[in-house]
Image 1 (cartoon, one colour):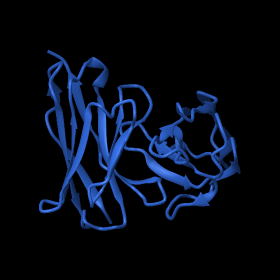
Image 2 (cartoon, each protein chain N blue to C red):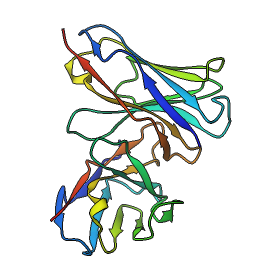
Image 3 (cartoon, each protein chain N blue to C red):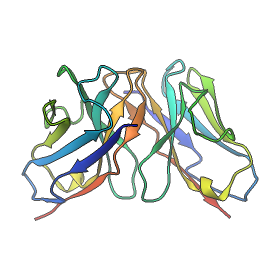
Length: 108
Length: 119
C-alpha cells in the first residue's frame, strides 16, 4: 500500500499569505497525485490533477508541483473562502487508491 | 453537468448490511466516460476509498473492505449501489458516491449521507 503523508496537519494563516502544503508518498508515484479541497459540511472538490494540471473553474491562486515522492500544493494570496481541509490522493497503485490524512487551513 | 445523489437508511444495526443507492442525473450511467464509486469519511476523520465499478460491471475494491463490499449498477434506473455487510461501529461514516475519471481522479461527488451503525 502506498502511504501518503501530509504536512502540516494544521495551519493558521492570515489573508493574503502564501500557503504551502506538502504530500510525501512512501514510494514513487510519478505524477499520479491529485489535490482536493473540502470545506466544512461540504463534499470534497477536485483542485489539481496529475500533480500540476489545473482544473477549470478553480482560482489561479491554487497550484501544484512535484513528482516521484514529493508534492506541494501552493495557495498564493490566501482568501477567507479558502478555509478548508486539503487532501492529496494517489492513483498510481490501482486497485488501491489512497488519500493523505488531510491538512486543515484556518484563517486567522 | 453530472449530479449524484445518495439515498438509503441513516441507521443500521451492528452485524447487518448497509445498503446505499446513488442516483445519477445529467448523464448516462452507461457512459464509457466514467467509473462510478464510493468513498467514506468517519466523523472528524479523513477519506477512505471503498471501490468503483464500470458500467460493464468490472469492479475495483479496496482490499481492506473487499470481503464485505459489493458495488453494482442498474442501468435501467441510472443508479449504482453499495452493499457493506457485517457492519460495526467502525463503519459509521459519511458515505459519498462519486465518479472516478478514466484517468483515476475523482471529479463529481454527491453531497454525502451519514450512516450510523448502532443498536
